[in-house]
Length: 439
Image (cartoon, rainbow, N blue to C red):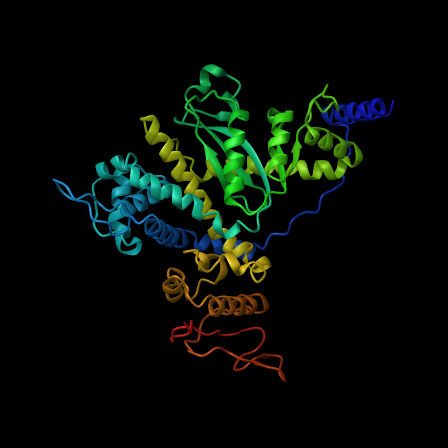
């Protein structure tokens, strides 16, 4: 009888949800710092070019590709890291191969590209296995800054258009029209909005659930822990609940009419439904984080509004994947302005060896000097962490706008309660120390 009562309550709650009669508790609106958002947009292109350069260069070093000599007949190949930079730059600016060759000519000094090359070289780079390795490593590296911070994830799928005449929202229920799309299934973090894993099925009409297991396993391997996974009702099954429980997370999957509390071997299934019965407001609050995955797809398609250009399937998949890498890097550029000061001091441990740690941890003003240190092995990590924590604290407490050029660290005057040589409202922090840190 007790089970029957719970089943009836479950059916009633699901009916209210489907009939849109359920009364939600109001959610607090998130505040947006528009001044920092404006600053992020103003510096976006410069930040992106620098991040592409540094991240690709570090990826080539990690893979032992940078500076490698290739023996054999014929002309030596172009460095694969230069080709990877060209591909990422091409997709970021959404230009064709010829336009990308022009961008290489324009930015080769800034991007550290040794020699300009033709548009056919860029076209063939999408088949280069070394470029593929670099792009895969870049994708992993974009998640390193938040691997200790991101705990909640969501998965979803969408079709990427290959023609200007296509619209996925209009054509997703028409199987005949789906064939013209490139299918993408991705898992994203709901806190920072980074793509943690992605799959591109060969069949554009493929369903999303078969790809959930590899996406979840890849995400679990990239992040320190997973606490919550929220999915739409296409993933509603006891098997998926068990998969989520195995990685130590709590499932929150959209419910359908007619489901039962019967476990059938899945305790995670029963616990998820019982949690919904006991506290539907909190359960739905957790579940609706799933909308972040739809937001990510929406931003992805607006950032890269040009349809996929490649006609060869493998090249088209590489094109879509390079856009995912660009999306993650662009998101990190924005997070450096919008989110860095909130959790920086507490979570600086992951920064020292990241080639773009300075993007997230440090203001824009002295990036050229810091880049030399961020790309190094950072042997004196304690010195590095202490310095960055001090700079982050000063940035949060004051509105610094320039650097004075002093080679010594500013000191706080206890009697005055501010920095020596300046007021509380305007401070001139130091440059990075010209002397090497202690070994």
